[in-house]
Structures are given as structure tokens and as C-alpha cells.
Image (cartoon, rainbow, N blue to C red; front, side):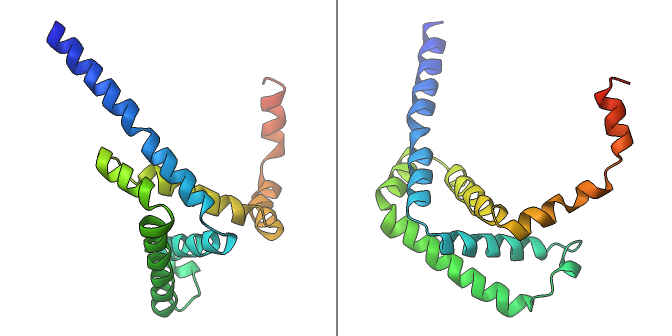
Length: 144
């Protein structure tokens, strides 16, 4: 019983210790990227998604040249962030055996928020509302 308690306490303390590193790294990444950097990230995400067989028909960009340029831009950004701007936070995540996923997920969310704040994007995202079945929503609201 004591052995199990020690294992549980160790696991909880390791998890509690490991948690701040991705958060610190995520904050550092956010603090050390510009609007241009986040747009470059969003472009890279878009081009990566556009490679999906069911989506690529909708992307009109010359995929190979544009995607390669975007990949080079992302490589330079990630290299700068992890080895210069946020080197100590990166080392802490590595030392703790943590994951970079939370930090980059946070940065990706910031990039998308920045794009979504643009008026033309908001309008495009809201376009579907015209086609909602308002009658069904009214019934739902009325409790039917």
C-alpha cells in the first residue's frame, strides 16, 4: 500500500512539474512571434491541409513552389523560436520529457484567431447562416 502511494505521489509530482514547461514555452512562443509570423504559420497550416486528397481541388496555388517556400519559412521560424527566442523554455521541456504539442497548439490557435479577426474571413465564415433552416431553430427555441 505504501509503495502504491509513493508511486502515485511521484507520478502526480512529475505531472505537476512537467506541466508548466509547455505552458512557459507556449507563452514564450506567443510573445516572440509577430503578426507576420502567425500569418506565415496559418499559411503553412492551410497549405498542409490543402494537400488532403478531398481538399486539394479547392486550393489554386501552385502547390509545390508555394508549399516549399512556406515550409522554408516555417523551418526558419521554428528554428529561431526554439533555439534562440525560447531556448531556455525549450530546454526545460526537453529536460522534463515533455511535449511541444501544447505550446505549438497554442501558437496555432493564436494564428487562427488573428486570421479569423479579419472582416472578410468573418463574413465568409458566417455565410452558411443564410442557409440554416430557421423554422427548425424556432421550433427548437419554442421547445417543440
